[in-house]
Amino acid sequence: MSLSKSLLLRLSRSMTLRDFIIGFSVARRMSRRFVAGETLEEAIGAIRSLNQRGLLATIDHLGESVTSEGEALQAMEEYLRALDGLAESGVDSGVSLKLTQMGLDIEQTFCQGNVAQIVEKAKRYGIFVRIDMEGSPHTERTIQVYRALRQRYDNLGIVIQSYLYRSEGDVRQMIPQGLNVRLCKGAYDEPPDIAFPDKKDVDANLIKLTEMLLTEEARKAGCCPALATHDEKIIDWCKEHVQKEGIGKEEFEFQMLYGIRPRLQEELAAQGYRVRAYVAYGNSWYPYFMRRLAERPANLLWPLKNLFKA
Ligand SMILES: Cc1cc2nc3c(=O)[nH]c(=O)nc-3n(C[C@H](O)[C@H](O)[C@H](O)COP(=O)(O)OP(=O)(O)OC[C@H]3O[C@@H](n4cnc5c(N)ncnc54)[C@H](O)[C@@H]3O)c2cc1C
Image (cartoon, rainbow, N blue to C red; front, side, top):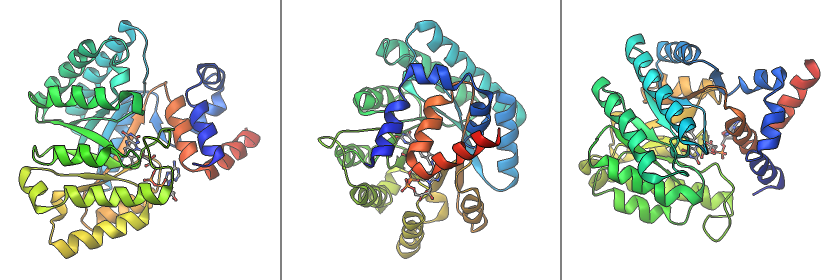
């Protein structure tokens, strides 16, 4: 991992820097490149516009690593409100959430109870819920909560990161149960004893895991993977692979982040692929924004340019 990437990821966890940065209106404006807005209404407006361009969505109310039960309950309430908003507006969107926002670091059963309320309500609305994957201290507990809830709810999916060595084993176990997995490279700063240090290995593993989830056995079991990447080489590989194997366009989907490669998103949708954009909204944009800068250090030039324009 490059020095700048690793530094940005470390800064994304700094509460002091967060409190300093979010106070600046220019910083808030810059975050808008990746964040649909601060309110649910703004996020729904963005989703409506994506839907009109043939794209699906998953909405994320920004927030993570909460330290009090009150904050977790507030986050849960916001998700319940978001579900009502999605249903009332009639837009086509699922929801994505992070377990540390729901209280995973406070108490696992408490967190699971909060997520259950969201998934239960989402099920009544016919809305799919995805549990995002956070840093490695949370991987095992995230999978445990997911597995427990998945026994009761089928409108629930998980995320697996191709940078972790353990992911192949996790995917192997999920296939016979037909679980719904979003595959991504992974956005956190992980040590080489648990994660591939070289990008080419992370990329190769993303292809390997996608292939595993697209086998006939996996598809028959009910797996319908989401390949979450903006990497055109991997997207092109996937398009060729599904064509060669006779896999239908409805048996998987591409996912990308709101604000990143929007033209590619539209092109794929126009070619008949299912494409879902991850639409984040809310005030707690700092760690999410910093991870987006870390993914592409060239993005740093862009906020700097904006800073001088302000
Ligand atoms: C829908 C979705 C959900 C995700 N959920 C999770 C999750 O739950 N847990 C998790 O750890 N990670 C998650 N991620 C993030 C993911 O792990 C990667 O960090 C991120 O997608 C960048 O990797 P890449 O696959 O796009 O490939 P890269 O090799 O990093 O990038 C390929 C190309 O995409 C473009 N690109 C990529 N990132 C950016 C950016 N930030 N700004 C501008 N251009 C960019 C560039 O053109 C780049 O050359 C998610 C990603 C997506 C798309």
